[in-house]
Length: 585
Image 1: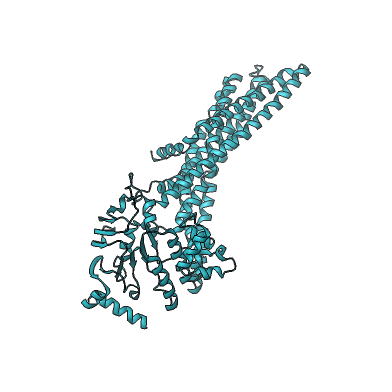
Image 2: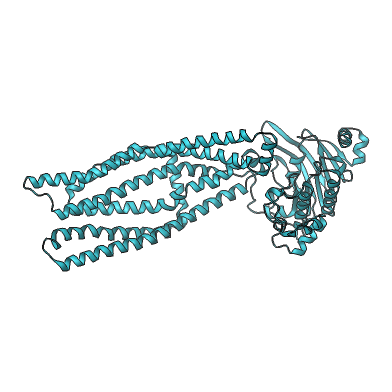
């Protein structure tokens, strides 16, 4: 039942292109009908034109055979073009649908799924379906039409020989079903193996992976891991190639034997004085018999390929069936006519990644427009999660987060991303030019706007001093730039977007004092006049925050200004004392 439902789902992929497929069917039918004329013309040559020396008829029949071959070739070219176009369109639809679905998944999905696994689904699984998608529909139509036309023509020639020829078809069907089931199982195992290899390649051959492997002396071990995965793939490929090979060889033997059986039967009847068929009919019939068996076997082989591809489609459908935890509202709330002011409120917010462990509980904080909130606490206290809830990178489990009184779950994704800007702790830069990285925030930004944003982030002079200026390629994950330079580029990118609310997952804790000061000045310029939520790792950077919330095991332990919290000599004072000791050390 599962296989049938998957087949129906696969057929629905072709539904938008049914008119083209119908045209392919017409071309195939015409090709099959035209092709049937050749055996009948061959019979006329052998039984009439040659024995009776009818030169004119012979010339006409020879010209007809050439015309049939030419027409069949022309129909074949158009048929191949249309079927390939349809197949590639379906492939495009699948790739786009999977990519779009993954774009809608929450961060939690990507924190629990290896990047190589995702890449394997899009590249290996969809790529592995290409031959099936581009040729299967045409092959099914062409071979079915050819089989049907051949059977009709064979009956017209001699129904008795036709019955003999059709006796073996059920045997072919049984063999093909067995082979198909075996191939499908092996294909599923092979794609899992490919996904494992892709994950190893993605993790170990990135810049970070190479650095980690070499500095830890693990390169030989990584090579061994890859070799082991590759050897497993070799074994699966051999099993896949050999699956049903003996059964298929049996079919080949039968195909070769059947014309011999027909000749033998005709010879016996002729020897007894009762000629069953004429020589011309016999040759024409065996020609049609080949025209029957070849497409019949191809039709069954296509069935085997479809069975194998079901494993690939199943893996793709797994991703397409994923339901994102964060969904776009059907009717997004309209933003205020005058624009977003930027007041943020967390109302009795609770959140958990799983049922066994609560990350946040009963969080109630108001952040007036234009003010700053700093979130501090031990590692794992929930401060990063709370900051990300404002940008709706996660959805609350209970309570709500509002911006100017509007629940963020009621805002469209476009409005929310334009309202809340995030500068994360791990800066990600595309393998593109500096200008392209900045324009990722605002594709239509002018050069003057790029320069103004870079000046505000205190990175313009450095960019201008590069040999190619703003056209300089940043390298894989921005490795041509230092940590501080990447952070200032990220700040410039956010300045270009100009959101009224900022979530700053402070990234200065890993920088030296001078670089930290430069980045902090860029962040201060970015924060001016905006509502700012800072996830603080180094407490010296948030002394001037309008309010500081200290989180402890997902709850607010303390809240106030720097001076107020220091006077209480509680959690915050303890955190600050440890932070200062680390700074001195």
